[in-house]
Structures are given as C-alpha cells and as structure tokens.
Length: 426
Image (cartoon, rainbow, N blue to C red):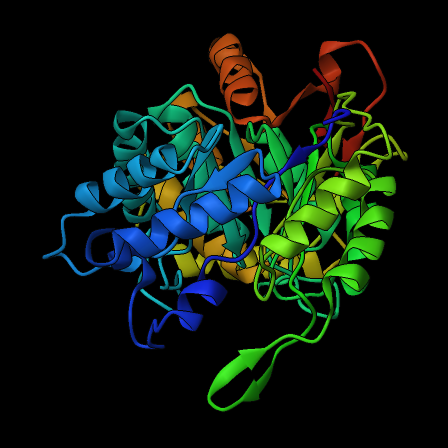
C-alpha cells in the first residue's frame, strides 16, 4: 500500500476477551480453539492487514510434551483458511536468560529457534517475525537460526522501556545496527510503549537502520481492571500518532497489545494517504557492544587488548577487559590466537557480560567465527596473516567490520592502542 506494509494487531487481547486464562499458553489455542483463532485472523484480514501474524509467539515456552510442529502447522493453516495474503511465523522469546542471570546458552537458543523456523517453512510461512525481544543476544540467536534454516525474509523487533533502552540496555541505534549487520530484512520496535512514546525511538531506528523499519506500538500503557489489562488509547488517537510514526520512517506498521481490527482499519487509512520510502542505505563503519556504539568514521578510537587463555579461566580475561575499559579504551581487542573454538566462545561470553563496549576479534579463523556468531553487537574482525581471506569471508557473513594492520599500507589507522598495534579499514 503506497510502499507501506500493514500488519495486524494484538492476538492475546482478543483471546482474553474470549476466555484465555493468564496461565494458558495462547499457542495451544491453535489446536484447542481453532474456530476462535481463524475468526480473529479473518477479522484482521477484513480490516486490511496484508500480513497475518501466526499465533505462534508462545511456542518457545511450550513444554517438551507438546508437539510444537503441530501447533505451528495449525496456526499457519488457520491463517490461510481465513484468507491471509501473507503469513508471518511469529517467534517470541524463550523466557529464559543468559548467564550470569540465567542458564540459557547461545547454541541452545539457536537450536530452539531453528526448530521453529523449519516447522514454519514446512507449513508454508511467507516470512519470519522475531518480536518482543529484550536481549539483543537472544534476538541475534533467533536471527541467525532463521537465516541459516530458511530463505524467507526475516524481520526483528525489540521491546524498549520508557527510558529508551531495552531491558538489557541496548539503545535503538545499537539494536538497529547490530541486527542490520547480522542480516535482518527489516528491524524495529514493538510492544511495551504506546505510539507517542515510541515515536522518538522510531526516528532513531530510521536514522541508523540500513533496511526498512517496523513499528507496532501498544494501545498505550496498560492498567489492571477486573484482573485484565485495559488500554486507554482509542483507535482514532492511535492512528493519528501512527501517521507521525510513518512520516518518521516506519514503513511496516501494525499494532501490539490492546489493539484490535478497528485499529488496523485506521492504520491502513493513514498509510493510504502517504507514500513510503523503502530506499536501503549502506551501514556506516559503526561498531556496537551490548550497550554502546563506536563510529570509526569520526576519527581514531582507542582500544586495549586482552588475550584469551585456553585454560578455562574466562573470568580472568573478562577482568582484564574491565581493566582496559577503565583505562579509557572505547573498544576491546580480544586476541583469540592459540585458543580453540570452544574457548573462544566461552571467553567471548564472559567478556561481553563484563564490558558494554564493542569487541574487535583477532586470531585464527575457527576461533574468530565462534566468537563472531555470539557477539551481542557488531564486532570488527582483524583480517590478517595466512587466513586473511577466510577472515574477510567471516566478517562478511556475520556483518562485522573488516580491519587490517595499518602497517600493511593504505588509509590511516582508525584504531590505535598503547601496545603499538594500529588498525585500518580493510
């Protein structure tokens, strides 16, 4: 529609009105209440939604005895029966946390998401929507799992608090750059905030992103009434701010908690009055950490090196990273020379849990690739030595910034450090 894509709105809000209990996983209704799910889908189709989000958000939190494949297949089949033009496999969070706050592993998360994606492809999904993510590392795990197990477009939206950061501290700029670099086909925000509070964050996304931006706000902040969440922003008020959100750069739009087909009708009406700009732009040479951003085109930045040890003492390396950051380093060069893939993975986890700054990965190709996969940000990779070509390929595959020793000639160094190593853009 004039370059905009209209998504649907809330599923849980409408299911609660039909009797969904707070302790129920809504994904099970695909099997137990198919008529209700099909009816809600049809309401959104008739309201003008061009993409119907399959009722699979809760699949990662199903117990092991439930046939997740059957749940996903039913969700997508019901959307087709309701007349959906396109169906998005909805991938929500697993509901666990990574260390040190939890026991979720990166590889374990990838395995969960990969299984969902394979089922979604088999059932005929048209795209993958990874949504309501609060941890950029979990979002990246889901994104890599999707890209490695299907050829469908993959959209990723994060959830932000009123302070403009995710629960784990990512800013809109760092989230947008990280996910664009990792291969997302669209990035954006959903849930938690109403449209007015989401508007400035959309502007930040539109400035930083190299792919289309998506926005699905709540119908305001909820208040509890009779044991249920009630949202106060009317469809008219919602659509008026969604018009501003579209003008700010969001081209994929819909609603989240508290919205209904009436909201979809009004969003579609606003989209019909304007023309979207879907132009892609290249990502600048920006590095992101868990909670920080460093631009390499604003002049040289400082770095400090820590060396990984193949002795299972990951915390010692993490402490060293804290020390160099305390000394003023804007980035940390993680030297993985001489360690195997497992040690590289464990060290990366420990270091990025300890410091929020971006990482620069140096060492052998196998170790660097294991580290690059699980970086909770956009790292740089030093492409030098006998494996330079292989390292360049890894940097391209994971969206990392490729660097080389400045002594190799060419442009002036963009990164320098006290030990004498200087790095330039590859």
